[in-house]
Each structure stands twice: as C-alpha cells, then as structure tokens.
Image 1 (tube, rainbow, N blue to C red):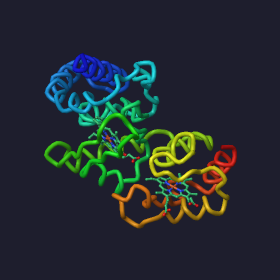
Image 2: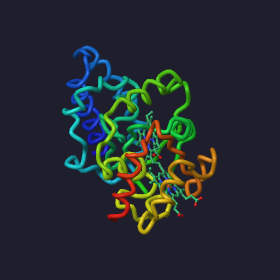
Image 3: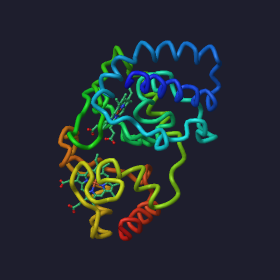
Image 4: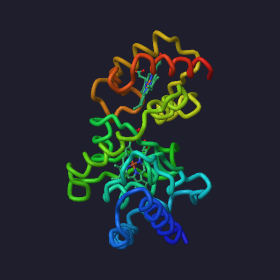
Length: 226
Ligand code: HEC
Ligand code: HEC
C-alpha cells in the first residue's frame, strides 16, 4: 500500500518533469526503472510517514518556464520528498536557492529533527550522488526566479527554520516582534559560523548578492505583519 503510493508518486513526478525538460520518452523510461530500484530506500522512510495528500503536492506539470528540466539524480533521489520543482512537499522542505555549504552538509550527513516532518533526510554519499551531480542539483535549484514579494522571499529563505508562519519553526526562534535592525544584523551576519549540526544555533549569513537590500526590507515588512 505504502509502496504503491511511493511508486505512484515518483512516477507521477517523473511524468510531470518530462513536460518541463527536453528529455525524451526513452529517458523517462530509464528514469522510471531507476526509480523502481531506488524505491525500497524511499519506502523505508515513507513507512514511518503519514500518507502524503496529493492535493498538497506542487503542480509537477507546470515548472517555471525559464528553468530547464531537473538533473536525473534529482528526479530519482530527491523529487519524491522535495517536489519535482524543488518547491517542497509535506515530506521535505522547499529547497530553491540553497545555501551551498550548509545544504551540502545536510545531504552528506543526513538529518532528522524529531517531530518536524514525517520523513527522514538520509545521508547520501558520493557513490549515490557525486559532487558533480550535487553541484548540478544546486545550480538548477538556483535558476528559479527570485520571489518578488516579502512573503515569497520569507518562504524561500527563512521558513524552513523559523516556520512558514514565523512562529519559531524547527529552530524554535520566533520572528514575531523582531526589530528591523535585529533582522538586518542576523541576515547579513548569520549565527554560529559553520556549526551546521547545531539546529538551534546555526543561521547562515545572506549577502546582498543573494538577498538585496531592497529585498531585505520586503522581508522586514513581512515579519512586521506576522
Ligand atoms: C524521504 C524524503 C527525502 C528525500 C528522498 C530527500 N530528502 Fe532532503 N530532506 C528531507 C527532510 C524531512 C528534511 C528536513 C530534515 C530535518 O531538518 O530534520 C530534508 C532536508 C534537506 C535539506 C536541508 C534543507 C534546509 O533548509 O534545512 C537539503 C539541502 C536536502 N534535504 C537536500 C536533499 C537532496 C539534494 C536530496 C536528493 C539527493 C534529498 N534531500 C532527498 C527529506 C528528504
Ligand atoms: C538554517 C536555519 C535558519 C535560516 C534559513 C534562517 N535562520 Fe534566522 N536564526 C536561526 C537560528 C538557529 C537562530 C538563533 C541563533 C542564536 O540564537 O544564536 C536565528 C536567529 C534569527 C534572528 C534573531 C532572533 C533573536 O533572538 O533576536 C532573526 C531576526 C532571524 N534569525 C531572522 C531570519 C531571517 C529573516 C531569515 C531569512 C532571510 C532567517 N533568519 C533564516 C536559523 C535560521
């Protein structure tokens, strides 16, 4: 039952991806075979998970027009939880515009914060996802349009840690009542250096090349409205 759901999900996502990319039906057939091979691992995670609600999944058939199809490794190993287009599902976070060093650490080491999401992020070694494949995945995730609103920017860059509602999220640090100066200082400076494993202490620094001064003000406006 769960296995059927997992396979159906992967196949549906793969079928959706195919619309967006230039990949041929032959590629898709190969990819589906690969997904079947990879399924037992995904299944093991889904066993512990609530059955995903198909209505909550991103629309896999409508990728951003300007972004090419995802790397094969993404479709086989990541899309089932993080969405065909990196927009996230009930099983995994939105991953667009990743903070590279931090994101690489999570992929190589895995992570499981109890109670946050019903699935587990396993560690993927270079034998499963090579450094080149990981770079291709991150490059592809970076190609998506920068959100144009404070809410969109907040959901893209802050929500995985502080919660989509801004009330604390997995790090337990609420955004409610934060001053503009505190937000500017933390976003530009980060916290905790490179202590990626410290979920409640590490926050990445975002330079103006990633979040511009104008975009930072939009985020501040969004936080003020929480
Ligand atoms: C079985 C579902 C599942 C699969 C498959 C999966 N992930 Fe994850 N991923 C998660 C979950 C759940 C988390 C959150 C872990 C936590 O914080 O406890 C996560 C977290 C992450 C994060 C950190 C995001 C953040 O903002 O903290 C990155 C980066 C990531 N995954 C990348 C990947 C990549 C790349 C792949 C494919 C090679 C992948 N994941 C496959 C479920 C999955
Ligand atoms: C990878 C997780 C992560 C991400 C992403 C993240 N933060 Fe944080 N943030 C934290 C953690 C953990 C702390 C607490 C650090 C400490 O207390 O040492 C924190 C602290 C803060 C604080 C200070 C709160 C206080 O105690 O005064 C602000 C403001 C803040 N974050 C805003 C943001 C904004 C805005 C974004 C998005 C642009 C963001 N954060 C993205 C993890 C994150």
